[in-house]
Image (cartoon, rainbow, N blue to C red; front, side, top):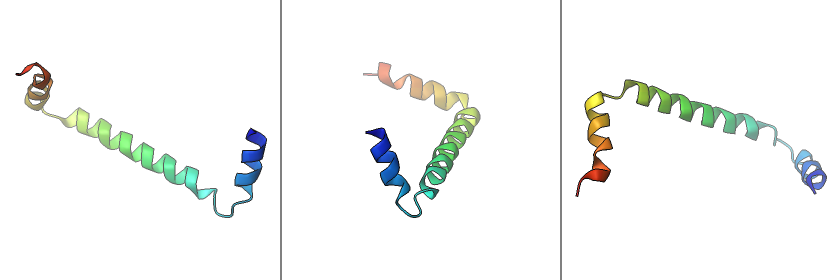
Length: 55
C-alpha cells in the first residue's frame, strides 16, 4: 500500500515543495514558542499557573 501511495505522490508535479513548507512552518512555530517561553516574565507565569486552582 505504501508503494502505491509513494508512486501516486511522485506523479504530482510540484509536490516536492510541500515538505519544505511544512518544515519551515513547524520550525518557525517552535522557535517563536521557545522565544516566548524564554522571555516570559515570572509574574505572568506565576499568575497563569494559579488559574486552575482559583474558584
